Image (cartoon, rainbow, N blue to C red):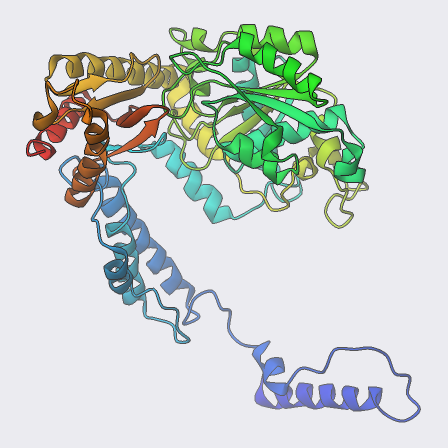
Length: 533
């Protein structure tokens, strides 16, 4: 637009404002007229980048992708590089220059900041990162994540996510089939904790549908049951949903961390005698610390006798269903009403990828959560509105989490993913056998999953197990070694106390890039770091 046209537009806007305020003219509520500068701004260049140059934006992204390939994928997965470049918080704040200012920065500075972010971040794809239940990477899953982030759509209507609405249902169908269901429902959630929370909410709604409208006043005192080894999200979910943590009845476990069905039966009776209404049991397939699998068949029998919803938190252990050799650990899971499963863990689909699977075919998920927002879920659309799945969930905006798993599955096939699971078991067993051969290593227990829990006993404590302060001194070893390995950048392993046991290491064998050499390195490095203790 020419300069004279801009002035004409601004003058017309002022005249319109004067006309609306003139005597005798009807008055009506309106927003103040925009300043002339804002009217002129509407004719400015696109703001696709700081300097308005789309080519510059493309060049920046190519450079960023180059940094990712070099620093994250090549160096970040190399055993010769550090797992992390540790800095204390105050020093790290200075190195990153975190302050946000009014003036933007040049592309060169932005690229330097991207490199700094990568440099000082923990490399979770590194073969010596054993710290969490997720690690490693898959190139096809990463490709899927890049595509979905670039498309930047929300998984709530077929209108704006046609590919991903259909894809999500196909992926969920495949996961349900592995559980043992020929039909059902489900949704991808932002993490296993939220999947567990959904299950509690669905079980409550099924029993007392009035609670959706009337809230807690429609409910008697409720009781849900889970083991002492369950994930902490069960209690958090009970608190968040207004049930209170006191509604969670903690069932005893055996020496391996498995729920004891007889104690579950007893706890149900106690709850009923106290005037509470049992409504849900949450079993665990792959506990966080010990990697235990609850006896699902026996627990399902108890649930069937008492008419309780059975939820299985298989966030960690669900991927074992892909293995013909090891899926027996989840025998009985097909009898569950709901299952939480995180493919971003053992399958390496990338954060986040968490599925809630339901056996229900009555549209319970939608009935429990729908609000029928007329601006989003119109019923007179030109396509089948049943494809608008967003009203099934509590969220409005929901990221696409199915593509990375779908693309990885397409590339690897079910057989490739099965080998990934079986390899993790094989390496865990190898580590256990090597650990037994070395002085100074003591197993907490023989593992049945890929969590290998053990103590490193330093030279000064060997042969002193009968000393009164032995356990106390041993509990101090893991924190010291953890600090040393992190500051050296050589590896990362989690540790924790557990019941009456003092701090021990929990080694997680999940990264598909791991080899026997990495297991040997782990033991050698602990010996090196702890030789003076």
